[in-house]
Length: 88
Image 1 (cartoon, rainbow, N blue to C red):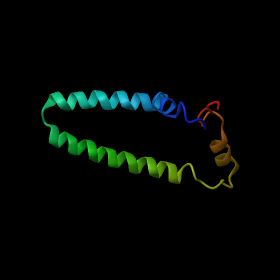
Image 2: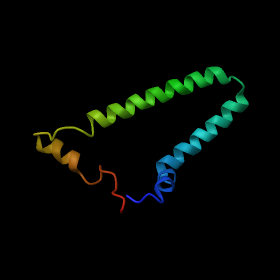
Image 3: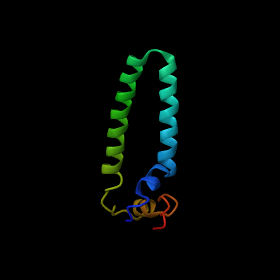
């Protein structure tokens, strides 16, 4: 992987860009709302919950062993259910 555009490629990736815009919008809302401490607590609890759900999804869904049932195997390998591959 080339080093030159690494950070640009990461931060301009569509999902990351959307999450950064949402984070900025929520940060501005919290700043003007006034109840910063309670919202900060909720924010960090949300970060922890998001982290664990992402871990569980990755651990238990993406690292499944191949099922023996052909229907389940076909569902896992179906091309519309897989994310598109980015060209290198």
